[in-house]
Amino acid sequence: MNSASLITTPLSLALVGVPNCGKTALFNRLTGSRQKVANYAGATVERKEGFFVLPSGRHARVLDLPGAYSLNATSPDEAVTRDVCLGQHPAEQQPDLLLCVADATNLRLHLRFVLELKRLGRPMVLALNMADAAARRGIRIDAQALEAILGIPVIETIAIKKKGAANLIAALDGHLPPAPPKLAEDADLHAETRRILAATVSMPSPTSPVDAAIDRWVLHPVLGLAILAAVMLVVFQSVYAWAGPFSDGIEAGVGLLGELAGEHLPEGLLRSLLVDGVIAGVGGVLVFLPQILILFFFILVLEESGYLPRAAFLLDRFMVGAGLSGRAFIPMLSSFACAIPGIMATRSIPDPRDRFLTILVAPMMTCSARLPVYALLIGAFIPDRAIGGVFNLQGLTLFALYMAGIFGALGVAWVARLLGRRGAEEQALMMEIPAWRLPNPLDVLLGLKERGMIFLRRAGTLILALSVLLWFLATFPTPPADWTRPAIEYSFAGHIGRALAIFFEPIGFSWQICVALIPGLAAREVAVAGLASVYAVAGSGEEETAQLLGAAIANEWSLATAFALLAWYVFAPQCLATLSVVRRETASWRATAVWAALLTGLAYGAAFLTFHITAALT
Image (cartoon, rainbow, N blue to C red; front, side):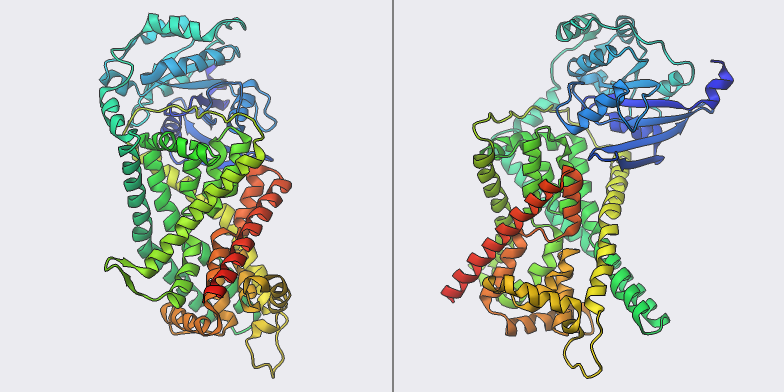
């Protein structure tokens, strides 16, 4: 192929490597913001591709494949990587070139996978990433000797530096390298790896002295847990403290937009649809975006630094006791902001049983959408009283609700282990502990953009559609002119609420609560607005409305009813956006139905016991 043909023919690259090799950092360095993320059709694995232009003007398309330790796939992520590399994926053509990324500070682990890829007989380039970190540790790699032994180009890269991929880009701007000679199928890859390392790598010590010193504290069985608790305290305090001004700003902007729409549109169904359905529905999602982004900021920083794998390793002993894996820590941590990203984070769990169990319990973490409901009920029924001169009773109640979710999740996982494993051996936690490193700001910013867009696309569109549907149910049919009670009582939602009250009466729920649970299907926090509509409460501002609503329900409900509703919200999977993500991640309507039935049954049982025990005691 001549030079003119090369320029006009796009180059297709596939980035492949072991997790924590810096592959995503190199992808971000090559493509910058020219990226797009989607899911493979019919699968739960993300498809991440980007584009850049080589110095000659030739366009390059880069597919960032999920991290894999071997082509013998043990998870959905690894299966996609295997199929694309083999040219067997139904939605992807086989790439022109495999760009294999390896961590220069840990070549022993990564080189074995390089040899496995070499067996495919495809054109390859090996990028020795983190070459600067290797040099600081005194590791010397003879890149020319390594290139001669492997039969493929070997190029050092530093993905976190602006010009760190310049040599790689220059090497890609030309003819493809020839396919390397294939290894024999019966070759011992471990022995071959040892032989190559002995010939090309000089390493003064297996681990960095600095890393070893930090790990003596971070991985200590007692001090490590204390450090983890302190880190989590800082994360959650920051999520709620930092997000407040941004959430208030978004809420004010959405309110202003609703007022403007109300002022410029004539009174009628169209104005009600736009203000109460569309604008209120979208605003109900956007107001929680700051909390999502702040939490993901900390998760990305902790992950980029190398701390999260260590936390998972530290908690594995406790997680296994409850029937989970240490890998479940990260999804459960994400679920404190929203269950949707938490459930999505289970993709890294290779065991299907462990993955489904984590999906089952992740929504029991107290997500931010529950807080408006908790705040309303605690403020209405729990006195603002100091306990022991230090603690506040309302604060202790909120803490107890958080703990109920955590211990409830661990209890469900423990029971599921007893019922579901049936004598099978638990899988040991096998994961790489990466080197400590400073997070790259570019990777953090691009990761925040990616997660924010995923959240808005998957949650926002569904909640918008449901908000319009629920607006219709709460608006039609319109009451007659002589109707004196709240209009919602005459609507479809009111009729549905009365029908549901038959089922919910044993746990103390009135038909008004049942009506409020209907908009709560779209988002849990919308139940507060539903209660305000049912009780016809409206103040001059949100704070006054909350006070009036709290007084109204305090007069109407018993303490047992309020506690039962709190117990219901601890466990019930009421958010249909979460339900849709469970369906997407499990690719099974049956598994989704089992998940919803289990959590709904657990919520009903908890509310039933709470209602009757509280009623007996009070």
